[in-house]
Image 1 (cartoon, one colour):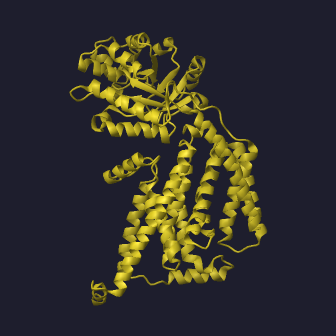
Image 2 (cartoon, rainbow, N blue to C red):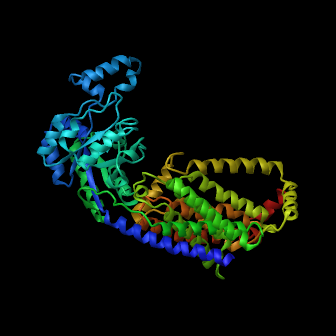
Image 3 (cartoon, rainbow, N blue to C red):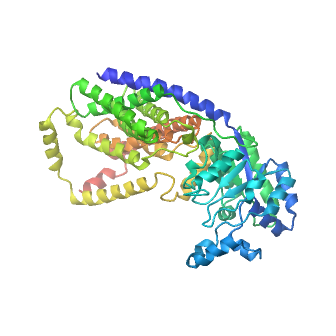
Amino acid sequence: MRKLLWLFVCAALVVSGFTAVQRIQVEKQQNVVELVYDYRGLEQLASYTHREMSELLNELRARGVTTIAVPAYSLLELTLSGTTVPGYILEYTASHAHELDTLWDQATKYPSSAFAAIREAGLKAAPRLSNPPWGLSSEWLQYSPDLVILGGVESPGYPRNLADYASRLAELDARVGVVEFAQQKGVERLAPPERMVRVHGINQREMEVLDAERITARYLRAAKERNIRVLYLRPILTGEDPWDETLQLLGALTNELQSAGFVLGESQPFPAWNVSAWQRIITWLGIWAGAALLLSSWVRLPGVVFLGAAGLGLLFSLGLAARNLTLAQQGMALLAAVVFPCLAFQVQRGRSHLLRFFSISAVSIAGGLLVAGSLTGTEYLIKLVEFRGVKLMHVLPIGIMVLTVAFQPVLPIKGKHELSSRLRFLWNLSIPLKLLLVGGTGLAAAGAVYILRTGNFGLPVANLEITLRELLERVLVVRPRTKEFLIGHPALYFLLKERNEKAAWLMPVAVIGQLSMVNTFSHIHTPLLVTLIRTGYGLVFGYIIGWVVYRLYLLGKGLFMSDRGFGLSRLWQSGR
């Protein structure tokens, strides 16, 4: 029955490979990047440098900029400018005077002069749409924009009038720019994914502290690694000649983008993309078969039981998909992300440790392809919907590996007697109090750092690590993941070289590299070719680092054991 389950896994892998080819073809078509400048920042720059706005706009157009973003005046800006505040806004602020401190930043009117100046310069205007409590001003509609950029934490019209704004945008056939990391409420109801483009920007405060090289690298990374097709730019407002520095930065960015294979122009949304029902069924069957194989390494039961479990799991997933397809997709992706890094350690093929290293990694990569094969749809490409369960997939495989090492002598468990005897053995283990306190504290601290470093938000990254990342980005096509080539893969090398009971406790560390590879495939907004290159780099560098560190370990061990003039052995003996 295990062979049949593996056959299901292989069939799912073939289908996922076919899905991957489809996705690569879709991603390769979208290579146009749109440069959008912030009008408010250009206004400030024009005032600071005593230049005409028309001069700035014409020069930007000559350098590849196609669109200017126009935000509405905030209540504070409108008040300070001396412009008459509309009556409906005054009525609202009068009745909500206790909230005035939070209302000053809310949008009011759009500057009509901005739209006229942008059109005169031969550029396109993209209004920034937010959701002020008194309702969004509608001046922007008369300019028939083909791109709108969302701002704030709520989509315009949220929660009651979303349908009205959706119909207006549909009539305009306007693209909707979704700002990365903003997580605007109601955005999924504003337009279909096939009319959305992702936007990445750097705020004015960051522009003042980041140097030009780092700003360029950040925009380039967004385009290459996260399917960002609209770059929201702001001018430099500090220095002796900020306009010259702004143009130099723009020139460096356009050169980098074009060198990376991108074309400057009007960005296009990803086309409608999804997979057929039969592709989804075979992929999910393979994931459940993998789960059954992992379970069979823990419990000894008739093979038909595991085969039946895989079938029931598939039926459950199909039933869930009939009610909520997105939830079913995310659930199956999470199952694959937990199962296959652990299952990989059950598959060690080849006589050399090199072959075993890559056979283990191949199973994890297969799991990553199954994850990617589950999360299909244009909404995943633009991160309107994404993989759920990042923390779980980073914790559960490590926990499973800890239990695997602890119960290894009795696996697969045949009955209650074996299980109870092993539990008694573990319960009666004598652990020195010092080791328990020091080791427990160390593990807890390492675990906390590890968990907090997962996801986009958590512990800040150290400057040394940032420097290393940027160095790798400049030298390589794409940066490999730190957890793989510095932690997980070297630990796997040690594990395969030592292959003893003490080294087995490296399995929970080695699985970090495997689950990290699978996690990389769960980032559907990252082009699949980038994911494959990043994974390959991680494996090669991780193996080399493991080889070097292991040789240093053998050298140190040899010096310690032979005591060639170092006195290490005598020092150790005297301390006992």
